[in-house]
Length: 433
Image (cartoon, rainbow, N blue to C red; front, side):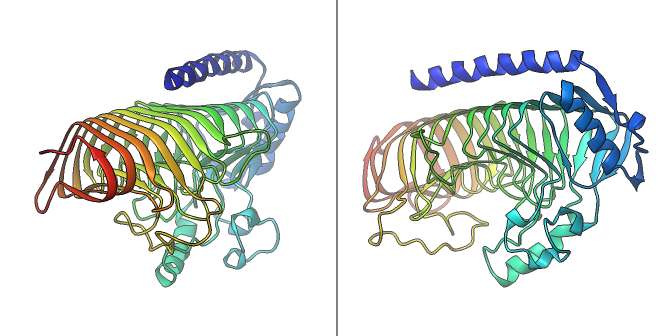
């Protein structure tokens, strides 16, 4: 009943946002060409685009980018504004890296991602839409090489870089139809936002591009991600809750992901930052093709919080690695993970990961390596996990450790070697006789 209730709430929000978008579309159109934008891919059009956005934000309406290549530095969205990219229009980030730094000119000396401004930003906005059949390109090739070199020297290290689109503390946000590609790091990061719809969006970055997450809702409520095609170098989707939010038991809740295709990338993830808590997540009718991970919940001691009422259903996966991962010891548990120093037991109990009430139903998968992993902590066991009508073919079996209340209902794990299940300190019902 909880899952159905939060799905209905999300649909209600979707209807509100569609209505808002229709109102914006009927308002005045601010064509960036009329503001002096050249769209020739050589001239910097930042000032013209920003002036159109500023004027639009005073009364509301649509800022239109007709076909062309609009070279730009960082821009800021406004309230009651639709940024429309027509078919054949590309909003292209400048290759001038200093344009994204808040201070200074040497991006290699930046201490964190907070030292950068995103390509497209906005804060405290209401009724914001990015729409159309055009493309937003972050010019990531200017950033990925040094980042990968740094990661090779220090496994797990993320060299700070700007995001493509970051919206903070916004309400009624919609991104529809557009292609987001080649971000220096994460592509779309709504943070502390309510009522967010991402529909029919394509997100693309090369498989080896470091930290190029596609869609990362962080501390958001009522989010719908639907009919998206995602092919990136890191998490396809990552639901994050990195800190507690005052007055809310769960910082991140009521998230629905449906009818999406996941290609290259690290799968559909919750975490690893979960301190603020995550609940009421539904993932259904999705397809994974050659994705490093399939379904993944990841956290560890020190960044953990409560994750509950998670529902996965009607999922197909081909050549993933592995298919299902629920781990309270994030790091080194899938093909691309760096090792993570997170002890299995003992130590502080502050920010302990707690996973409970996870239902995985009607899943069919082939996995290159292991079938999956359910790994809790001795002092924080994963609890109440149901796998129902699940069929996985893999090289090795599924590990279930430090877990209780795990139920297998019509589950078939076929392996090339070893046992289909490896059980340690776990209560599991429904194991094959």
